[in-house]
Image (cartoon, rainbow, N blue to C red):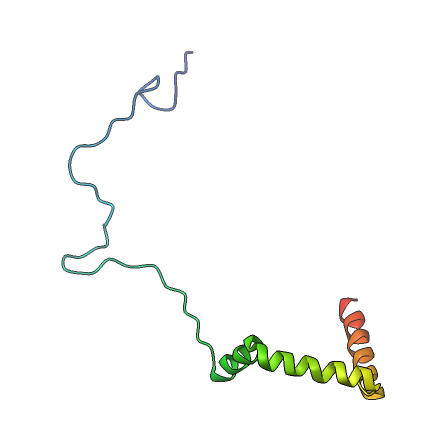
Length: 98
């Protein structure tokens, strides 16, 4: 028994391009617009815009840094409440990672 392939045509044949119209837009009806891919959109709230302005405003940032430096120099920056809050956040991170 001699088996030459799964069909009655044996051997390899070159692929030729079909003549005539292609049917790539089968679902397109005459006069309809082609389907476009969805576009990404971003909406920033007014509060988000305000925060962005605050963080990018160098005058406001410099003023806040000056306040923090003065509080550190006075010894009033590190309060017990701030240390407890920082420790609580640190412990929460450890508990969440388990």
